[in-house]
Image (cartoon, rainbow, N blue to C red; front, top):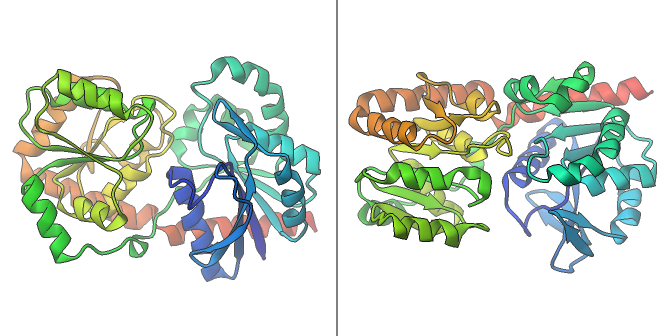
Length: 372
């Protein structure tokens, strides 16, 4: 069986949450005899095929972009060629131009959509896009939500509930590099024995401005790993608040990231808007056995982090509650360690890449059988 994934961007051009999910899935299904390929756009003007982790990644040149939506004329022919040889087309939503390609090529193969997020920020453009979105989602064979929480709170998913199922995102811990003793010693020397860790893109919905307010008045080290559009704005806020306990490390190699996940006291994940549909970095915290602090936003973050069991869940946008949660984990290390152990147990029970891959392979096979 051959499956074609289609999304607006992919490795190595970008390494975001959805790209990580596609990568883990493409690698995982190979264990079940399924060959995955990925088609995406490239802003670097490169239109070629490369091999990534055992699967082919095809890139078409992006011509222009409007409101985070990439457009490409050349991808139409490339998609048609690849779809012709695929048994299943796997779309990753949202990406409005993907809907256009779907109808322009007149796809006749079984189709599945992983619904990663509602459209939150571009509300005015959503009014224009909505008729096409309804038609696209109505036309596909099956829709996958990444958590029961998101399914329960998304008006869009509720409209198509008869053909929606939940397959949680999974990660393969073995695919993460094991940090060397030297890297562990380096970061321990630089940051100390205990610190809170945030990993992720520095974007508007990540709630990092709330974390900066929460860090005021605390002397615990808070480490921020990642880069993004509001990075300078965030650093300016930290400087204005005189936050000498906050360390901005920028983008780091994977080995350094896993070293920090290994060493940290807990993972703090203050996303406050529904644009944060799941929380890959939060899941990484669970995978490394760390207690977590997250906000209740009606999405997968509270599917990963169960308040009082695997960590603490606070009201969204509340720096005081976030500060008190950090203080509680810091002052109760035994309880924090127990939460971390339960977080890792939950990861192995629900969130491995193999479980995700097996569920998707079963769905692919059911869709191909139903089309015969």
